[in-house]
Length: 330
Image (cartoon, rainbow, N blue to C red):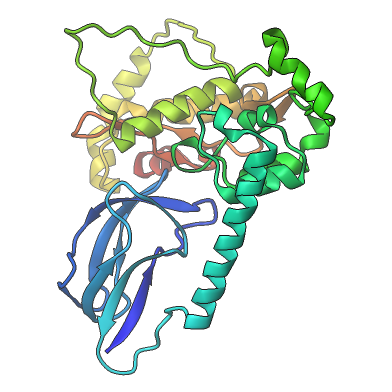
């Protein structure tokens, strides 16, 4: 018997992780080659992960709702015969354990230098060690936006912060001498201010609190993010679309027969939006701090309702290059 490592496959250049939504197989189940083992979801697409070999599922390393990085081993499959196995060697495993132990020890030393107990956020030993080596204070670390699970600061996040640190002033410089450190302890006003938190929501005994599912969490996160990157303006203009309605009624049957797609008003309006953005590129922008980013590509997102009540927003890339038929089939 040989042990095969089932890893999370690469799903695109911009996809670095996925959430496990459902295990289709249990430990002990027989699996055929190319048979789906589990279902995953990313910010862009939901899909299944097939097995590259035939065998028996011997071990599951992650549970439903766990976030897994691309290339990470998620399960082991016992196979018959001499199948090439990706399992790590004992020497490598021992070396990894030793490296982890060193990282943990380094994290402990960092905790002694910077009192991470004053923060209600979780920081891994590796992140703490980098913060110590780079002289990052707790106030600075709390200002770093985490991209990991539950907003945790990852190695990439803190390294990016260190890289751009010279461009952004530190929230507070850490005192270097013990005498100076003792002063803030006796003066509450001089202590580092905690990161701003959202005001608590009032809940009474008659209210029902329901945890958001994964889809709603994504929608909520992106809505908040969009406020920080795009100017939100709402304007209502009344337009006479009588001619469009008459034209659609006239050609919709022939269009469906010829193209195999129904002609709704949606692709008509989307084609108009794409043309307007091309004629007025100042509307196709994003904001990054004090800079305005003028987008060259015209990508349209159209919200679509799902049967469970959630929404997804498929993105039509380079929409200005599509005609009405292309919009209808996109």
